[in-house]
Image 1 (cartoon, rainbow, N blue to C red):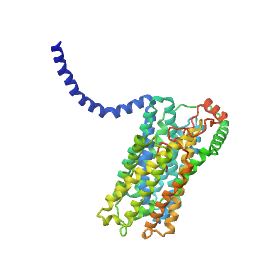
Image 2: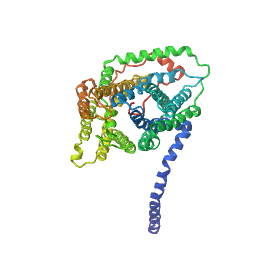
Image 3: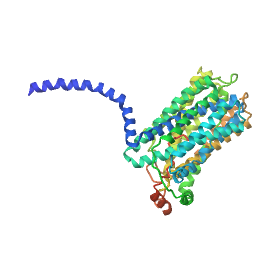
Length: 497
């Protein structure tokens, strides 16, 4: 017996020594096996669609659009910072009407399909608009805005449609719901990091119009999703019931919005975003100015933006692992306060105080962008959770999209308010004397929502906010049951446009 034990011991030791090697090999192949598992369980076209829309179209493409649009407005259209701020807000309008796209994809099939035609429409809008901007020598600003808004509409329609596919597969494969959300988050985060990292390089090499030309590739991939997506065909659909479905959805949303437990948080979310004025264009023009600013290159601007995206990812991880169970009011108080204080770093930079402490501009901006991205995400996450708590049964997806639209209206108000502030303070393409004052006013307004926290319900993310009797109308439930329609225009991207 003793001999057997002594013989077994070395063998077990050898097995233990071999395990780390096998473990490293398995870890290397684990992501590939995970993708294969998802493709086998839910069809490869769905996985392809999620990666294309969240990762390539919204993530990588969204990053290229942001940096490319900044340089397009500055160098090609040669508009003032205040005007660029207004024009950028206009391109967000398609995201404000997201509930409309959501309801359309749910209740209005085209040629017997609920999802595929809308992917095709989104791809066509993106390709045509980006080709128009890239090939024309200098579009009139009105036509340029129309093309940029059409491209934004294409991304918004694809976002709503893939949201519906995600929710549908989460319902049909409940054991894989967490894996699906992980796929969405991984695709979006990776796409943004890569997009921001290469955006400045491409702007430098081929210019902002060339970047818009490259954006036809993500749009073409979205178009291909509409061709390849595996979807059940619905023959002989009765279009007579569409009007009633729209009326039922609108009635249910209006009834819910009138509840004090709903409209008060909605008012807070709108005001907290609207009063935090956005002066991004003023800062961007100053960043790239050769006289008064740091004169950052296109590549540097892209790298800085990628740091902000990384900070946002860290903020999401911090919320998930440490702060997700904190009461709404407590968390919103501290994140809003830190949001205002973090803006002071911009003030230090514009006043050039960092140079007095021998801190280089690039190093200081990288820290500023990373910290601001993390705090902004920490401020946004509890608002997302709170929004999900306000959705009544039966129309969860569409109502959530409505709440995101309210938030997007707040962001639009913030952008236009910031543009008006830059105009009033006479911040132009070459004059930045009052930019510090615009930043100071913005920072003060950022902490003003602390006075509105009484609108937020007491409780934590684990408690129920809506009354238990708040349910959708019976007529709407019948439609949902009879036609298997999912009103699921969910928003995966925590960052609203």
